[in-house]
Length: 398
Ligand code: LMR
Image (cartoon, rainbow, N blue to C red; front, top):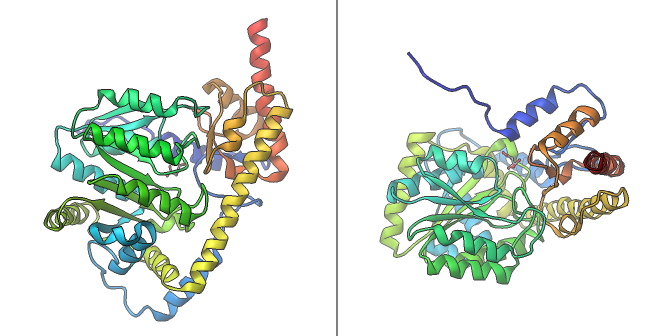
């Protein structure tokens, strides 16, 4: 007899399915974290198309590449992200950024079975489930939802419950779901606190390139990594190369001496082998080709910069329209935030009302994917949100 509890995959996936099944033409998708342009499309970068043409021309076999994936991809990407420091790190290709987190989580559970992992509250909906599946007890540290005030102090205070050897997940940039990041000096202070408590950081780098330029976001990641003797990084190419369905990512680990890294590499490879055997190649080859080719690299950087520039202007416009429509809360954190997301101070019931009455789909936590807002819709969406908040005030008075 099988025993199981039916459960939804996770709220992000649930919302994606709900949106797909809505027949309304004017529905608005502010759910899953996928970049969309001003036509509501998630385009393939021209640099990716060019790289695919090269791959199509040059590829001569589809035989296995290996458990650790394409070594040149891992090396090129490692150099791009961490510069010379990459030579003292180990890296293996993974099945997207989630696959990298999963490998790291299983690795941590094996080498430190007594340890726990700390994630921010709130965090990406899949973090707790992912680490729990690895057998790691998950704890959370406080994270501001609508303001960066006292963010660092609150994080450090709530990490006081962590014990030596625990792991801490830090969003490298573009915090999911709040869009609120620590400044670089604050990150340095957090690193110091983590080191003082002898905790190990797991840097989740899923949105590099959506805060500032990808070079500058990667430089911030590299300088953070430098502050630790032992650290993990899960990189995702889903958003910054717009390669979502190709599942491209990599896990990097920095650690003591070379011999240790060799052993750790063996363990990661054995975990990969027993999970999925070998990662897919197509997307990783595309990334490698782009990083190897000066012309394609420039083209990709330009396209990525345009996508993240659009997000910045949507932030400005959305914040402005919400205020103009009388939303009644400060929208500064939306304007100054980074990446795809922000949280709105709405109840689950209000989020539901916006979906049912207006066809506006956002996570029940109030998380909005700003890329889902087309210029022509910002005012209408902001107006609907403000109306919901105003009707709350009226209900309270009545
Ligand atoms: C999100 O948070 O919506 C993205 O990271 C996509 C996903 O897989 O959940």
